[in-house]
Every structure is written in C-alpha cells, then in structure tokens.
Length: 125
Image 1: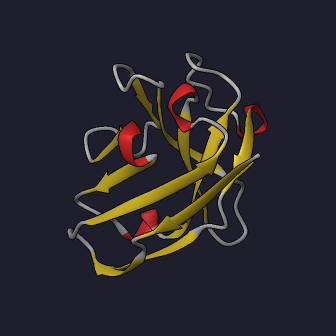
Image 2: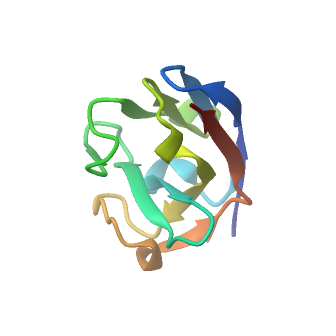
C-alpha cells in the first residue's frame, strides 16, 4: 500500500506561481514513477506531468510544457510540481499518483495504482 498526501494548492492570480508537494508513505517510493494529474469541474482527469524513479526522465502534458516542472526527492519520499505563469485554465483539483512501474512515463490515469486526495488550485484572471 502507498499513501499519498498533496499540499500547496491555493488561490493565485494569473501569471503567478505555486508549488505543489506530494508526500508518500508505505511501499518503497523510490522505485515508482510518479505523476500529477488535474481535473476541472465537468471535465475528465488530465495528465500534467510524470517523472521516472531516478528523476532523470520526465514528461509533460502539452498544455503545461515550458511552464510546469516536476521533480522528486527520494530521500524525503516527496514529489513536487512547480507551476509558473499560471493561467485561469489551470484551475482544478491536482492529484498525485504512483505508477506500478519504475520506467514507463504513462499519460493514462488507468496506469496509476495509488492516488492522493487532491489539492485545489484556483487561478483568477
């Protein structure tokens, strides 16, 4: 079992920044691909970013490339999402998730085994 707890969400003006954190406990965190997804009201869950166990490889959704950065600190069992140049369309609940793989950077939510409860991000115009 893996428990994931997100934090760092909030209300920010367009153009601002936020840093989300996801603290993991339980099964060995270091050997899992970690991902961030988001979901806006009335919309499907959307892939945001993923990072390989070593941190050496990452992938991003097209809508956030160049603005968001995913990173991880295996010693702290924590994955981060630095969000810059935020836009109103970035508003939603952000979830971190753990994939049952060390290497595959999947964009499909069905590939992720464990999920946090989510943290709300609201970007005002």
